[in-house]
Image (cartoon, rainbow, N blue to C red):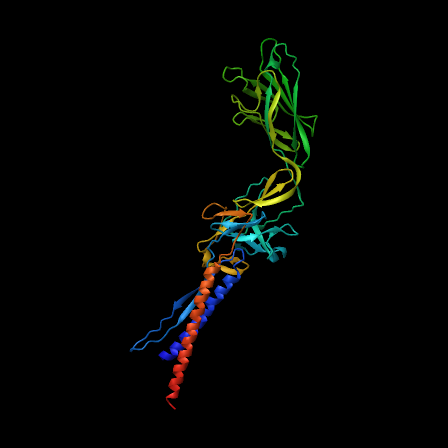
Length: 433
C-alpha cells in the first residue's frame, strides 16, 4: 500500500508543479501587460490516516490565487485619458459590444487601469473594447446624488468633440468708481455710461448698458445716483432701475449707503447682488454690500471701471478631454471654458481578491468579494484617479525566473520518485521468477 501511495503522490506532485509552472508562464508572458495582476500557485498537503506502523502518502493539492489588490508601479504617458488608480479602488467599464447593441444596463466590469480614447461615436474606450462608465453631470457641471450601492445610473462616457457648446452669462461683477464731484451743487449732471458684454442662452453676444445719472442738489452734495440698465436684446425696455446713495462718513466715505429698487429685480444687501431679468434669463449683478469697500464706490473726480468681469462664454468646440483626480471628466473648449461632463466613481468591496477574472485585466464582483460600493475618488477607502498614467504589470520577472528554477527541480524530483517506485515494483515482480 505504501509503495502504490508513493506512486500516486509522485503523480499528483507532477500535476501540482505543472500548475505552478502554468502560473509562472502566465506571469512572465504578461510582464509587459498594463494592469496585469500576478497569479500564484499554493500547495497544500493531503494527509491520509496511517496506522499499524505503516505510512500512506497523501500527496499534495495545488490551488491558485490571483492577487487583484496588489498595486504595481505607475508609468507616465502622453494621453490625457490614460487612467490608473493610485491606491484602492477600480474603474467601472462595460463591453463595447453590449453598449453598441443597445443594452440599457450593460454588465459592469472593473479594471485598475486603461488606455481610453474616443471612438467614432465619441465613447471613451480601450483598444480591447472596454468603455469607461460614469455618472452624467447636469448642464451646470454639478453631479446629481446618484445611488452608490448599484451601477444602474452609470452610463458610457461619451464626448462629442464636434459638438458646439456655449455657456450663458449668469453673473456679473460690477466694480466701478463714480466721481463724487458729479453730485455737488453746480455739477453738469451728465449721465455716465458703461456697457458690458454678456452671452445669452443661445451663445449670442449681447450687451447691458448701465447709465449712471448723478443727482445734482440745489446746495451742497447729494451723494446720490440714478441707475438704469438696458439690454441690447430689447433696447426699448429698462430691465433695472435703482436709486443709489453713497456714504460720506469719515470711516465709510465712498461706500454704498443704500440701494432703492425703483423697477427691476431685487437688491440683497446681505450679498450685494441685484438680480435683473434679461430676455435670455436672470443675471446676478454684484454691486457690493453697504459699508464695504467693494463693487460700486464714489470717490474723487474720476469715472473708473476698475473691476468688471462676468461668467459665460461664446459657442466653442471641444479641444481636449481630461479626467481629474476626483474622477470628473472635463471638456476643454477653444473659448477657454471648462465643462464637467461626467464623474467616474471608484468601485470598492471588502475582498477584491474574491472577484472573478474574466480576461483583458477585467474583473467581476462575486459573493466571495462582497457587495460593492461606488465612491468619489479620494473619498472613503479609495485612492485617486491619475490621468496621463497607466499601471504596469505586477509581475516581477526576476522572482518568477527564480520560482521557475525551483519548480523545475521539484518536478524532476517527483519524476524521480515515480521512476524509483517503478524500479521497486519491478524488483518485486522479479521475486516470482
